[in-house]
Image (tube, rainbow, N blue to C red; front, top):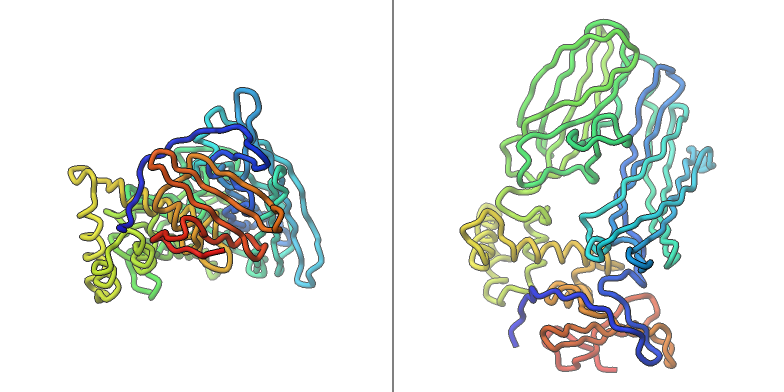
Length: 420
């Protein structure tokens, strides 16, 4: 039986039946909230004080929404702790947030998100920033820890960390615009914007901007000249996207004033032109194509030499482009969007796209309905995914109690099964 990618997506809600509970598709019941995080640090006019901005991006599909009359609502809690080098908490804050949407589709979209920011002031030194997001309905928490070396932000001329921003969308999260988290350029970006702050002495200064590859090859270099009458400057740099096919590049700033100088850098992910923005690594993308590629095609992709790999990969997807006269390949974009979603939703000890749930989601998309039975009589948790448009359903069982669901029905499925 040949595998295929189902495009039809139907969202339906069915009332409770029997002892099992029916859930809307793509609700996050057993997973933990995922979020993106950046923690830039900035000098102040006081050499003994450093400002830390903790900025978290929480996608709508990372938390669970509940139906409230004519809208959908979700609540989450953001907890931040700043620890010193001795792992003692010196600062922190717990904040609660509410999300509301009038459209169900927005509640399951990774493109809709909430940006939150909290600021702290500490002395120069080494710290850890611990951040957790807790879904107030499921009580599941996602956690991240970032190490901060603020020893360089002391006296004299100092550059801050760099932030990739969108100046077209202004808010109070950053003086330069909404931050892009993680820092990345999409297929359509020809220019990009970098926000930075610096402490200088009144007078003229030079700012050198280098864009280099990960192996230190120069892509562009320019020196800007400025003058300041204030102790701290805040600027947004408009830069041209480098003409390079590299997946990532580094932006380096060198600030010079008299005999004093300071450097800082930022690695930016450059998503390929001509390919979906959900792809960041060609080798990973080839591996992930195994669900849709034939055995012959998959072997050809895997064995392709480095110089030809991207070309063969593009040819593979061009054959499947449903609208070859347009710039976008909708099938490729949808396929890797699903891959990205499964990595966020179903990942544990292995990448989410490799799990049985990830595989079925990639091939069939979000279920029309999910029937969940937690801790049944045999002590196991069950999920049955229904796809009414194609008359299919799949049963998953958590055999070990750790949320690692295995596909057990249909038992003769070509997608891989386990008898129970």
